[in-house]
Image (cartoon, rainbow, N blue to C red; front, side, top):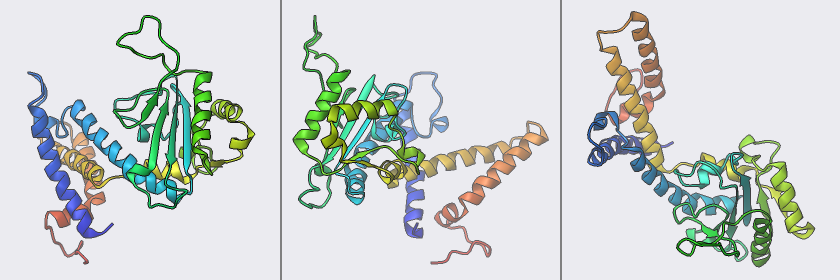
Length: 291
């Protein structure tokens, strides 16, 4: 990681930690913890920030990764409480589980023409579940609801999901269908045997012949981070380190506890030495900056 980028990231993290906490303090209820104890704001503020990151990651990283790994359609089916490892990287922060069954479909409609990947290239479809804050085209059932509330449609569920998946595939005619199956990477092996069987029976041999293990695609998406995400992570480490250091100066507490705090602080300081010190303009003969 270039030193200049790292220094800017850490400085941005320091600013973000201060500004986010000050903004969130105005929304807290009486008696809530002060902003000093909530450097990243309330949970609702964190969720809003994470939702923005999710949108940006799906619009930037995903198109490039699908093109890089030569997968023009990526199908990710999962059931409630048995989610794929990639689940938290493609859904909203306020979504804690798949809805019964949810099938996420990503299609690179620019791949056949060889157009450069862009946010507009990848369709995002949810067969079951919600739109995740407007990030997916959430399909509903064609069946009506008895005594509907506000015109709500029936929830897409069961065999109807597989039938609709086949329609989606046949309309788009992908050259390759990536599935999360791998003997190498655990994070790329989230497709359960039951979901694979259901999808295989629904699509038939012509389309299942196009199945390809997605391998690095889900793994790389999980591992990808925006600069602003890294900034918050570093700010979190800074906040934790500051609290550890504050504990060392507290005269109360047993000697063993202080030694434990000292060990933790020294470990964090060692890990962050090349990042924090240039930002704070610290210079020593031991950790001399090399440009």
